[in-house]
Length: 585
Image (cartoon, one colour):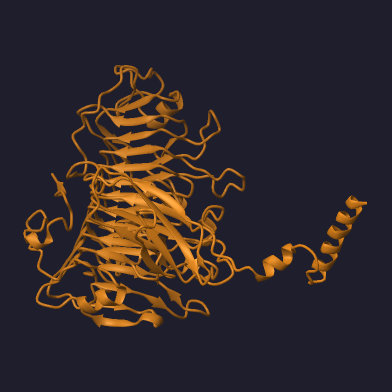
């Protein structure tokens, strides 16, 4: 009988709960109707260590709880102390930390009901963590790479019919040698010029192509142009013709490549209409001279990941357009290095100069790209762009549904001289870090586009209204911008664009994290502009800029007194700009 009564009470409770009336016990749906909820955990929380500092960034939680997010709380000592951020502030930098000590950082969102679930990251600042890798030399090093005993030799005087690939019986054609090579082979080029009549195509993994030690080989495709085909000087094909996986683990070493639609390209399965959209990956280009391409000098296509380009000289892109009267305006699409959605690219210690448009950009959702120790001169458009403008079909929406052009890109210790547009531009980037760069005489071209440090918008073919995000969480510090007296524009400009879609496009969400930069215009005051309607600032001075963004502490408006190596002689600018001189010798 007692069991029956208990069951009856349970049934009564269920019935009355469904009716919205509590007679017996508690009702779960009544509880959910009345109880207020705090936010969920923030997303994409990162902690990036530097020299005595750690940079934190995050995205809003997927659930706000029962009311809007009002801000964020950040701590490095388990909430004994905390930093309070507004709802639009999605980053924080802790400074004056002890190098070599591991810190635990926590962040949580807050709404009207209180603080939500915390997210945790650890990081250990070190004196070297903010320093670039590599040395101060840019461009090719001496060809001292050893030749393996089992290398396959090629010579302009070789004979493909009688060749064995030995040093005494070399092939004449590089492509013939590649066809005979097994995965893991080294193809050794004797001095001279090779004209293959088409691209040198690598279709096997772990292949190295190099000049013989102490010699110099040239691959010349300047005279090949059948029907405007995209034949590159050297092409790393998407599919390994033995394993049918991707081509991976290859090297191009101490070789000069001139001409071609691209001098060097990395091919992809992106548009093969199959599930696998990867491309040639894990490839090193080092100590090469790459130049006089018809379009981009180096092309990294979607899905081509972990490409390293180091100690190269790259110049004279866009030869297809060189006869145009407006060739030097920067408006032709022919970069020094053009990366469209290739993750993990590392570009360092290169000398990049006389480029038809931008020196280097990484866009289309390119993630974890590191650009450091490069000397870039006379790019007719920008020196370096973190993101830019990509057609929507080249984004991987499974990992980047917001269409960010660049994610977690780092630009550090680069010297950029005489760029036609901005020295460094950020376009639809997420969590970019830009530090210890020196920009000299930017916006020096005929069109005078943008500003030395520029926040731009991505229009994404003017047909992607669900994309085109603003830059989010940029961290910009310890840079030097030095402009001549002829410069009459802003040092920093944040764009807001109308007329692209039915709504305006903003170049920045919230405010940037900035500190310890040096700004200088010879004989003039530096000015800063924010064109966003909700936070308008026009041609304001440094003090107003600092107040406007609530940051850029430690930044100065002084003459850095750059020496012949573009290092600051003014002690006020110590630790600003490039930290090692970048010389081409």
